[in-house]
Image 1 (cartoon, rainbow, N blue to C red):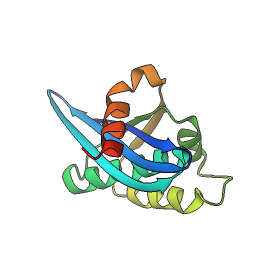
Image 2 (spheres, rainbow, N blue to C red):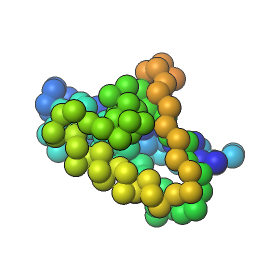
Image 3 (spheres, helix red, strand yellow):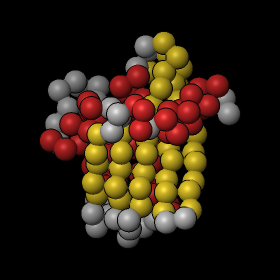
Length: 129
């Protein structure tokens, strides 16, 4: 099972944003930073999950995915299949389309203190590196 930690961050809200993805599989780990355009922090959190799923589609097809995010909004939207905010609905659709590529997908909310690695990567993405 692949463990995937995601985080989105914005410099301002809205502001220039970034997504961080940290993936663990047994004794291996991968780090990804994705600069994002100006958007809200919540939008960046959704985009972080999308970017992580894109990485998994490219590299881990057929694997069981266990995602972790410190965004209660994103986790709740994915678990219920519903986003109240119209801006989040297409992002949730994009996530659900990618999830279909995998035999099993789990997502769990974790506290910010347990998501520091992905947070650091998201902040690096904002800084351009």
